[in-house]
Length: 314
Image (cartoon, rainbow, N blue to C red; front, side, top):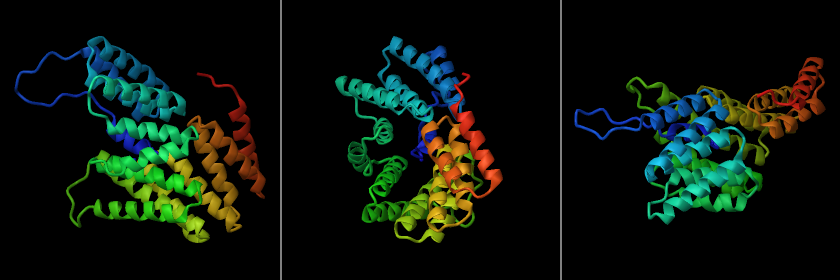
């Protein structure tokens, strides 16, 4: 929730820095820290990770000036989450480890959200074995959102390893969690955040189902399920997850020798490029070119690759 691998979850867990609304007297609040933190959260929610990083750095500096350990831990998580969103997993890993070391040094309990960021960053920097070990520990976390996100991460790792048994276990677990979290027949009106959270949880379960179907050779099921997951990622405003789900659908279509495979790779690559995920974008766009028998798809993929090669303007 990477979020979902994990941005949906990371967005939900971002600490807003808002106090409770009570009539009881409270200690004075650091207005600068709160302002930076709110600005960071707003930028993160708008998909502007570089702005979020800058604001969270300012907030973290203010927390360090206050020597406020709780705020340092929470803001370190926020900063690392923004770095992941900005496709800077190495920086996120360093930030998470730095904060975890300080919490331990000063006798504070560990922050499981920080561990989730670290596990995600490890996975994205190529250390799947350590990421899997950390995620295994997080599966028993009291916070079910974190536990489910860890299960999703383990499912991705199992898929990378072509581990049908491990992927089946993760898929079944998330299916059960999504079913348990389904609203009653006459639910109270849901907030926007609740709708996004529910969509993200359902998308996690569907994506692992699609990946499992692909491993088992059921390409039709993999294609349709991955497209359902992509639709839910859109609802959850998880565009990295959307691009990834489109790539799963494209892979299934390619194995089934369906002509829409090229278009699906184009859509996945274009989405990834818009998020500055150049590595994934380049791979998927090149696959679109390789598979395309449609002049429009070929032209669009060529243009997207050319745009990708241009230096960043900001």
